Length: 319
Image (cartoon, rainbow, N blue to C red; front, side, top):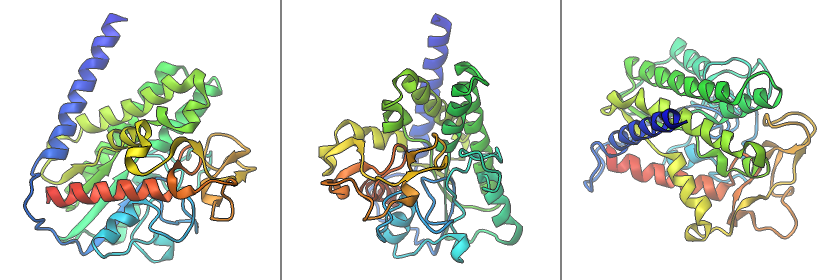
């Protein structure tokens, strides 16, 4: 056990050092020299701006996904590829595994999303690339643990490998000419209502998402010139620990009532799925603009806007 604890601490310190380099390198108070002309996005439901017609949040028509909020901060739009835009991110997408978090094989993995872009497109000198991962892989690994097809140790190891895999895709983007890549790993999913309601597995969920980030960071640390890591785990820990400091009331309740008879977000049937949620499917008496979570996994527009604004501030300070 001592060896495991020491190994985990070493991994944490390495990841913390990598995060410091990737978030602080080049930061300062000078006015940003970069004026983006286009945003291109890859990822899962956290970044999906409507690939299948709806978003994983309260669908209220606002800039309710962090990537859309970030682009809007520069006066730019960001729409899904399915609607003619440049956001390839899709709900339930895993980093490399082509069976998504909900068990479907029609969802493009993050790797396949990049394949699709590079097959016909290239990066301009003022393009900003956004990429995230880790949420869907954590969900899928937890499902395998619950099914008894793997141990908790295997779950953690697989989550770490998914972090390595995302790092490899980020390296691929840079080699393909992407000059500005903004990376968001997994938030601390142990803070999600899903994990909180699943007390027997809260620690495994938290450790898996942390392992993903650790392995992601240590494998992109040498890309500091081109890569900015926007620390979702750090930022959403701040929000969930003290929501009132961010003009929110609650970080444990779910505001949507849009239950899904299918395994819509990968955590089982009969669960709330925010991609089915709109202003007509909000729990009675709740002001969804004051809450953190739309469903057991994904965030409200308010929380997304906060993180998008944080990412904007980090990007402006960096480039």
